[in-house]
Image (cartoon, rainbow, N blue to C red):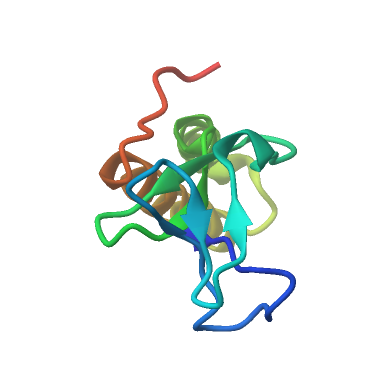
Length: 113
């Protein structure tokens, strides 16, 4: 999960937004962020981890995993099959790690398109 940090304070560690009991998020300096103000572009969704930190995860990780495995199946057709296979497996591991992050944050993607 990629954490969302307060743009007013900093973009480094220690400026992460955390969930509050009233449903809002606040950085350590007290700047507030409402859930309706969390607007992410592209294939990402926001989530809160077990420690209450607000972040985002990629919601198309399973699609990426499927594409990487398809590339692995086609690696033998490449000019350098060993490199193509290794590269596609690296992509598959990366996609699975993103899926695991999303799943653990409670944002499990549901299908491959």
